[in-house]
Image (cartoon, rainbow, N blue to C red; front, side, top):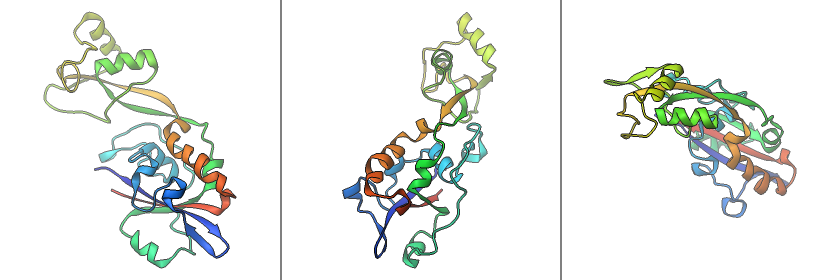
Length: 214
């Protein structure tokens, strides 16, 4: 089961907090998920400790991220009608633009997954795979250590050239891990924050109202 994010962006004005017009400021309002790279679970983890290092059914996806803040509910000054509309989700929280921009985005963590022979070769040469799975099982599926996968490729028992939708006969896989930068996991989000929102004024006067649904 997937998890989606819902974000509303507000700015503090003389007469209170006002929701920004997404058409004017390049942000989407509550319920329009694309604004934050739909289902970018690394970003979800950083923003609110949602799906942090774990995927569906508890599958380990990496070492996890330090978070900007644990979910802390909505601000006390928020309109009751908004709270009612978002009551069906989970992990309700809010963050100021300043908190987001001041976060240590230069940190790194590890990601991991199960890969085909072809992606294993890519991992060896480029430092990370292009595609992977949290886990895999089924008839005739084999998950082997990295050393055995390398030997199978060397001897021709496994080929890095795909021979089916899941690689070589859909049968041989191995687990790999690699380092990722926090900022690389949130490039679109941070770009919009810096380019579209920061010019509007004091980052303490801009806030994100966030919740998730699964």
